[in-house]
Length: 390
Image 1 (spheres, helix red, strand yellow):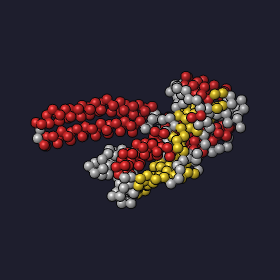
Image 2 (cartoon, rainbow, N blue to C red):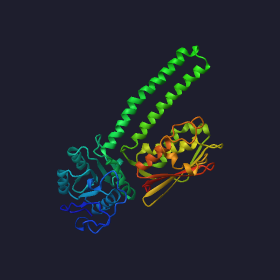
Image 3 (tube, rainbow, N blue to C red):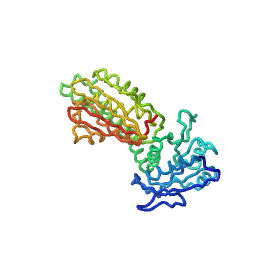
Image 4 (cartoon, rainbow, N blue to C red):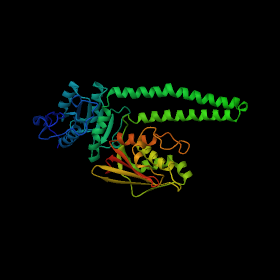
């Protein structure tokens, strides 16, 4: 039921151990801090929740408090919102797109004009594709209400509230890799090629082999630099919308067409895959890495990959199983480390970044990834994601 025009604005504060909330402010609920970010002090983080539907506001506020350990300021009407905006005492804003007393997008733009560095999240029953997106959208992220959306919301807000210093560090790393590392790698590759072209006839077999190794090493360095850049960008907030996972798998298979054809590989799906609220490009990349991993680390038989999914209780689990060489139990966590290689590059080419990317994508969407495998018996990767009931 929509709150009345004069509905109160309430604040929820994360409790200390063993303490109750002030019931005059939050009602009779008792919450515990389940997953607060240790890098931030909860009392310094405030989220403004703008929604005129009391049940929706209550559930969203409860999940934000218990999962982030933050304070939630509630605005049920335009007067309360105007008061909070004037004070500006919040770090992020969550807004319902359709409000009985106004337009959620205008609310978001008002926040962006006054506080341009404060992220605004659209949390609405209206899917993004049904709204008319402006070229200069005010939303930092969009989450669709529903069992999966409520569970996803705290993770989205938490990602947007990453300390600015950490963001600056990543941006500095990206700039350094782009300018300070890529340029010398390009020069090494260029001059190695020139030496081979101009002086190849004057070199003996060993000299030509050394020049070839130099060119190949420079190319691998350029590839690794680009993959590190891509990996770093996965941590930045990305636009999300309902993504049918069957379509994401189709795109991944199209990208892997040559590798599958060359290896005689087969990818099967038992039943349809669910739809999740996610970044489409990252979902494609997730499946491309997992299926590509199965093709690369195949056994003697042609690779066979089976993709299945189970959905329930606001989450879904996607399984990607293969008949490859398998992974020893001691290495089940190590394979997700950046640049971790279990085999020499001469036998299985690559940089060792694909599974690290897969884990980063899953975690950025509020999910997890785990592995079951044994040497010679194939591997199954389980990706757990919020949503999947659509």
